[in-house]
Image: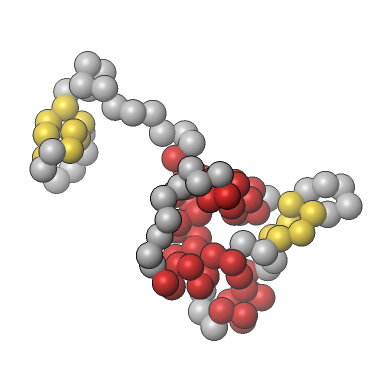
Length: 101
């Protein structure tokens, strides 16, 4: 499933040091428990059920899920070039005009 794939992908990026370290202690607490998975007999990744993770953590792994979704999603992001969009600068950051303020 996509949740298992995204956690596996994020773990690979962390191991390869392609992701910056975090100082968020709650995220560091949640990631190891939220990312537990096994490989099924057919070779598919199967992550531990969320109910079990919540039980072990004492809360929902929201930070770990959010972090993982962000890392997973970044592989599909293309940089914005000033030529491609009508871009304005906000605090030194280029933002396309269609982005709300």
